[in-house]
Length: 131
Image (cartoon, rainbow, N blue to C red; front, top):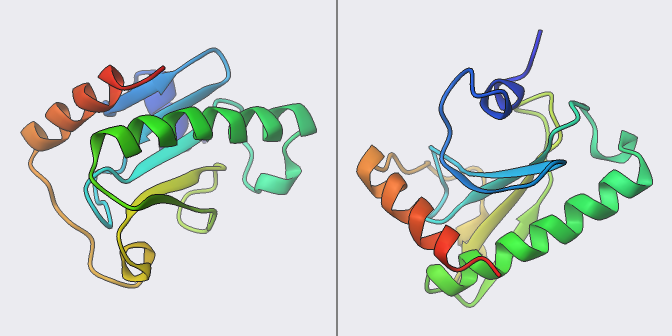
């Protein structure tokens, strides 16, 4: 059964896509830790990041770097934190989280529930800052 990310990739369900190429996609997390929290996902469906082929893993990292720079240019923050947890969805994904303090990337804290309009606006702003 396809993961929720594969369904977004295949446009079976909507997602707030901030960047995409033939191998990767980046979407806003709809339940973010902070505004600007983005998920970077390979289009190949693998459960565990270290099961990715080397070229996919390195490409994922470089794609995440490009997206992180756009997020940092959009969302006021000191830096973009990166986390790979991978237990909540059985499809590799990297969390990019704008950070002003260590608490901003604490996954045990309550998630935000932004309005659809906020997510749409932020999506467009991040897209405008992609190199």
